[in-house]
Image (cartoon, rainbow, N blue to C red; front, side, top):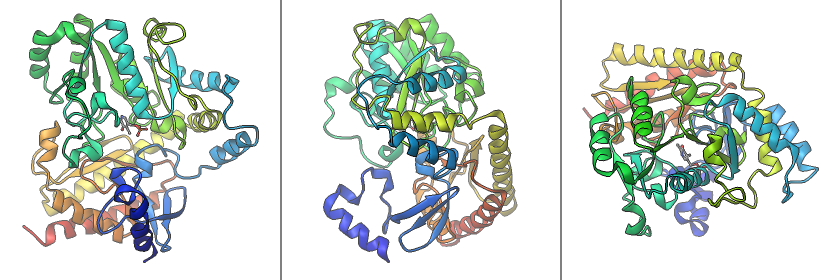
Length: 423
Ligand SMILES: *Cc1c(COP(=O)(O)O)cnc(C)c1O
């Protein structure tokens, strides 16, 4: 097995053999030879239907022809300028047109930088230091937010190397819990700069906000002079044309974007009300900078991608998502598996949990061993999902109904495998 050999060699150069912890799984992750559309092929010539999709960015699948063509053209006329170019405005217009809260924006190179900058901006704007996040939410790998974090951090202890002086200003409460937040704001309200949330928690699986929760957040932040930040790094351009704020019809003050916005290349953005965004340097006193921010390659990939994301595409994704989810539910009901199929639009997951999942603690109660048997069985069947109960699976526009049908058959088998060995 060539992947196995490469992984052993990789471990000599990279901690854990990988460049991001979520990619490591036992006995070894497959090494990719190539990818196209809905499929990813490893160096051992095995092809998988891909529902990891690089953890979310690839809404058009791998190597989308228009993206490849237009990015290739851009490469021939330069990859970084250190001075503005017109395409930045073009992409800005695509974003402002779609995202309800976006009046002005800044590009970054990752979602991590986007949330870091948005939080700094909220602190600068309000003159307050504390921030509130939800347990299990992942907002990137920087110090402010790596507290009770999701994604890879959900399976590991809290990171060392983060000063208490930093994290003492990060308060966390359970998702979907109005009472906890009311209590916290009563005590700390005038010190809180912002509340940041994943509108759909995609880094502990897939948890939707309860009905009325977002409206509650909007109201309580407004009443207390707190900036509301929607971290839409996953949901932006994913659950609807205008992201989760469009899907649920609640508009935050600031929004962070990533993943899809870069069309498969590294990029993020933060955007929001003009009145707040104008505080960014060189206009105002809040610093944000980046050598590659708004680089012409990522910007072109973003434009080439967003231009293809029309209502028809979202309808098609919704249809495929609904078909997949309803078939999973039929299997689960028929076989009386004690699991929770969840998801919306083109996101889905199965919690190996007898109870419904509304927050991090609920998610953590899932049976990870069963999940891993399910994951491995899917992999064997040629279906690739992220190797963790605490990630979400994605569908792209490149997935055919045949892909989806094959996947349903594989899930049927994988669930059987998951429940076979142990009761
Ligand atoms: C992936 C993710 C991030 C971090 O983005 P990177 O580009 O990996 O730095 C932040 N927030 C959410 C919700 C994410 O899913």
